[in-house]
Image (cartoon, rainbow, N blue to C red; front, side, top):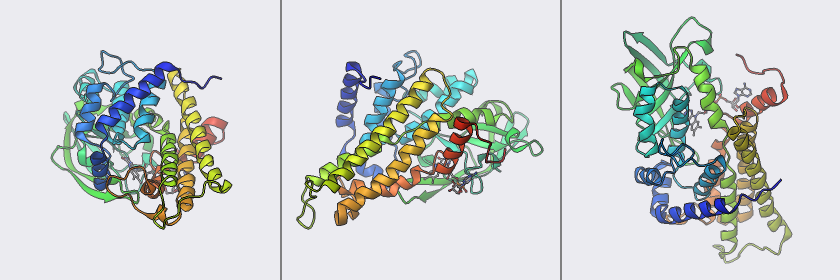
Length: 390
Ligand SMILES: Cc1cc2nc3c(=O)[nH]c(=O)nc-3n(C[C@H](O)[C@H](O)[C@H](O)COP(=O)(O)OP(=O)(O)OC[C@H]3O[C@@H](n4cnc5c(N)ncnc54)[C@H](O)[C@@H]3O)c2cc1C
């Protein structure tokens, strides 16, 4: 097996690094960390102009027709420097789902704006009592003529504060079994009756509670069949679960090496003649490599039109748990310096370790918790019986 990604990929990597040098300024990173909003309008528009919001889409659709590997490289470079691409990544989860399930009218209205970086779409699945068991959602949509009237509350609607639309899971029938009575809607955040309240997380990321009070949306905003959300959600979740945190592990290594080259607050540096310290950083490099290879496998399967139902969760599960383990270990290795929060403008130092440790916790929760990923791997990968209720 040849793991060399080739000269063209190296050139692309350089192009992305040049773009980052120009657009991902210390001021931008400082603002993102201060507000907890990993999205920036100007940066998204610049990505759109460069063709990197949806690089895998065809040129006619506004993309660059990039291969899955090239898309992975672009994403890897942005993630490695913690560029604010999260809002656009979530938007792309919705956009790819609309591309598969939307009507021609909704595709024509939404997708060109996505590819230009002009709009943000967010996920409105989870509720206070239905996260892992997403099909237990209670937010309702009632048909009234050509409209639907939505009432309910969603928990953890990340990026809603900058969103144009929420991709909402709503119950449309009281009688049918729980998975056969849900429908997806693309609800404008400006619709009367939509409200939100901020929720700050341990990792500094802002998320939201969103409420829907008699929100009227036309039937044309429905995505997929009435009571057909389970099929739509299935592909949306498959896109979401095939994610990797390998670049965040690379960033940990970068930070550890940077810190090691800088005298510590008490005047001492890390002792790299000590085999234990060297070994602990080398261990993170190995964890990053395993995480990357799992992502490459899931990416290759998807590119062949094959299912990633078990391999996507493996990449997500392994890389998020590795990030949690490794950030804890390097924080410990950095000693007192590791507890220092990042200073404004310091995006390579010990503050990275402290932030990574806090942020890593949530990576094992969103997009499906580790327990749920394990359960899916057992069912889909090993053919074991379902552990969760249908
Ligand atoms: C920062 C953040 C951002 C988020 N952003 C979004 C977003 O933008 N949109 C959105 O819709 N959601 C979002 N979520 C919600 C996220 O998807 C859920 O938190 C997650 O699915 C877990 O659901 P829960 O919080 O209700 O926990 P629960 O489902 O109540 O789980 C509690 C615990 O029980 C375990 N558990 C539950 N069921 C099982 C089972 N069957 N087998 C074994 N163990 C089980 C879980 O693993 C967990 O440890 C976000 C969450 C966070 C924390």
